[in-house]
Length: 66
Image 1 (cartoon, helix red, strand yellow):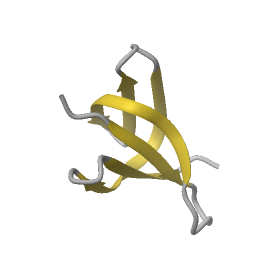
Image 2: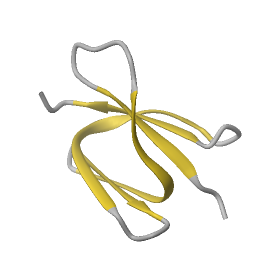
Image 3: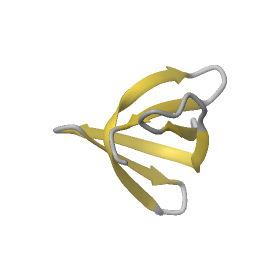
C-alpha cells in the first residue's frame, strides 16, 4: 500500500501547507481534485496536481481557490 502526504500551494503563495496525510486515492475531474484518506476522510478543491513524488510519498496540489 502506498500512502502519501498531500500539500497545497495556494494562488499567489509560493509556500506549501499540509492538506492531508495518509492519502490513498486522488481523483481529478473537471478542474477539481478530490483526495481520500486511509480512514475515509475526504477533501476537495479547485485546482490541479503540480507534482507527485512516489519515492517521498509527496503530492503537491496547486489550488485555484482564494
